[in-house]
Length: 316
Image (cartoon, rainbow, N blue to C red; front, top):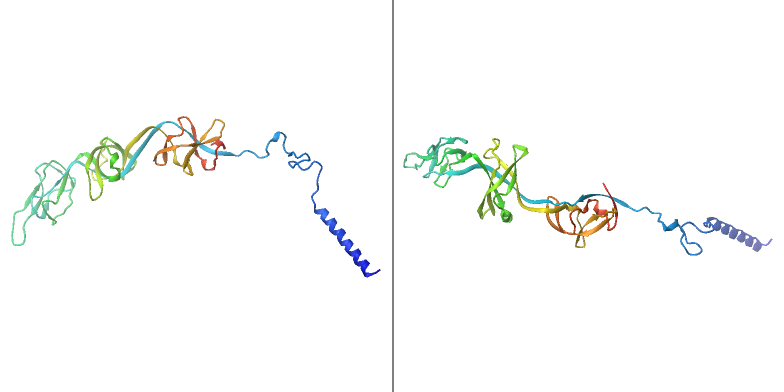
């Protein structure tokens, strides 16, 4: 056999093997086609009636039924408790304090001697000048000690009525527009951490301090309490403006996209509707809704980040 015929037979065998291998890897095809694939008439297969094989996504959310409530703004500040009608006592002349006849908390009567001032100077001698109590009351402050030099503008003591206590606080200038007499406040004291004492504003200073840019206010406790002492440090929560019958939801429930502010309202069929709203005052993460929703509607307050208009929800 010639070499040419041998080569031709080998080539034929290779071609046959290649064709067999190709047929083996090609997918089979059943009559009528695969479910869901186009049939001969061009109509899709699938489930009867055109039902989708995918289940509808249901989102778990928390909701709130809108009800009117008071939405109250407030200011927080620090203050100090002091005796009512407190006055400062000044000496008649300059000199050094040589004697002090009272201690902090001493009860004094009008005319009692509080201290003595020596007005003597080098090369001259003068009799001691007494400092008398101008009113009856309790010594609430003794800022100076024996040996301190004073003049007629230096307070050597403070006298007040500790049976009538008040709170003195300072309010920044940016907040003074909302201050009024009789505003209510909750007061907490360091000594009684788990208790709250109620008070009200009795006086608002007509002057803003030019240095601190603050205005002084004074508050009186609603009830006398022996545990409250002059000199204590107070934390004050002063209630300023009340918005009655407000519709309020958590601020986190509000979405803002492309300048549009909206919430999701839950419908009777458990779907949600994207509803544009106008916001009011935000107090401690609770924001007032001025328009867009009404009393009795159910609003999504948790889980709204994953929602879209018309989504199905389940309340938890």
